[in-house]
Length: 296
Image 1 (spheres, rainbow, N blue to C red):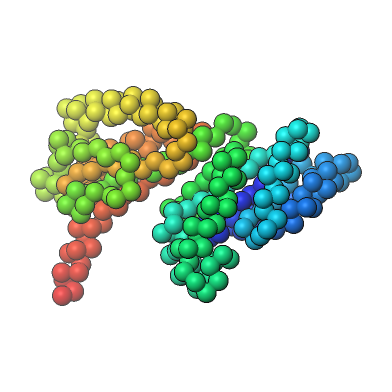
Image 2: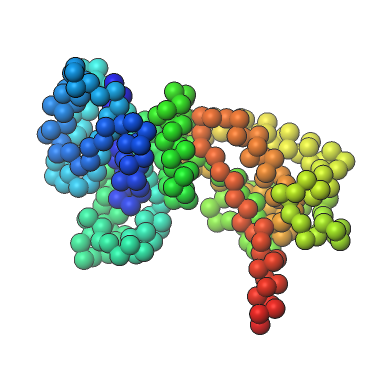
């Protein structure tokens, strides 16, 4: 039997995750009272009941009973009850934004400030995050990306490193991404902007990619970049990091950075032990600015 406790911050996507797990064949129960967890788990493993996959949604709604969960987990460890903890998290500013958009009140804030409730919740759930086997930060995840991560963790039967990597291309003239952990400047590469028939195209197209990679400098750089990341990523996982944003920048974020970011994404996609997504932040900025100018 596979027993998963789905927990985390309010607004981080626990309800959605439970629905997705249900679609994946899990028997899901949300907001089960803590005192009922042990008898429920015992019942779940008994035949003929025997559910092969069970997910329990536990969160701050348990109120004063929540500290009892620590004792339940200790008993399960002593009795070799197989369980895993999935903790869904998001940045505080993202959670505040989600609550404002839905116009719902945080379970701990009442009529007060949402950020105060979030801070209190983070403190009370701290022990669960420490115990978690899997941590997913949903701050920038689309719904389909969350589903892909859940499938990878619970259906793939492969090691999962609790790390989600975003490869992000950008243009320096629009500013360095504030959330970037690593930033690589590729303005030393051949610039298609100065080639008339390539200027309006992007690094997603083969002609532009071939121009950027001419002479072999880009390939040499990317090989060195791959080697460095092969060293860094496992160490980030050991350190407990669960979000890594790799920024690749050129002047406008349309040609060189898009080419390199795309190649890096393709390389990292062979690693199935962590989550991965590709974003091109500024790829359409020049076009948007021109359209705006024409409207004026």
